[in-house]
Image 1 (tube, rainbow, N blue to C red):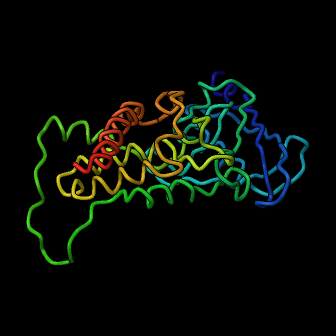
Image 2: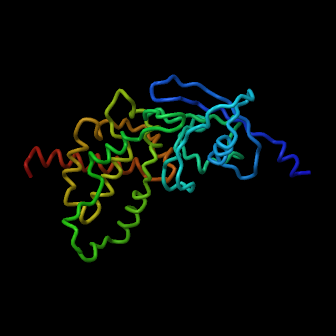
Image 3: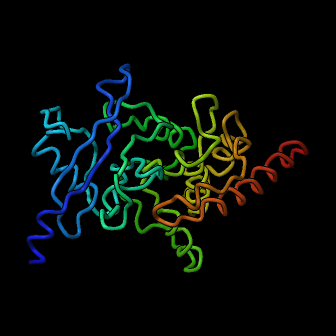
Amino acid sequence: MAESMTAAKKVKFVVTRQDDPDAKSYTEEFEIPYRPNMNVISALMEIQRNPVNNSGKGTAPVCWESNCLEEVCGACSMVINGKPRQACTALVDKLEQPIRLEPMRTFPVVRDLVIDRKRMFNALKKVKAWIPIDGTYDLGPGPRMAEPKRQWAYELSKCMTCGVCLEACPNVNDKTSFIGPAPISQVRLFNAHPTGEMNKDERLETLLDDGGIEGCGNSQNCVRACPKGIPLTTSIAEMNRDTTKLMFKNWFKV
């Protein structure tokens, strides 16, 4: 009896679609059979297998991105019921219906729920979010970090470039050049590394440039939205302190 009731149950989706980057967006409704423990990705896969909308009309399958399906890659970011988050961990049983799926509007839409996160990747390039190595020869074992330092650095390293914090931040939009919370936090991570520390001032100078740390309005939306619980506001506060120290250092030529 319970199985037949489950089979009869339906899940309704309202998906914001866009056929190409220059096209106008529109919504399309879908209704699919309910299964226990469904997430948004499995629902989208069901729509992909049978792309028929609520009117019974065949349509193009919904486009979206996903990879790991376990909240590690960050590819499946979208706005679900008004909240930017990962679709792979959004369980249908915990979502109010109809479930509304929209692309993150901080980034250009490629098609449907697929976005171009180039803005975020360019910001990481700008702040040099990597550890430089000198040549390709064997450098031997890397430098060791004190355990307390390693533990909080590990928390910062969980960033998966999903873009959710940028979508949640009111200061990241097409009218500003603010790089957003995640790149600032990555500056803190790589400046803490014993090797990355050699380029510390260079990264901080980047944060002092246009679109850098001064663009933060301290809304704290980012830390609430981050799916990995990264202490983004703590990183921003730390980088505020470090950039201020660097300004005084430059002024007084210390």
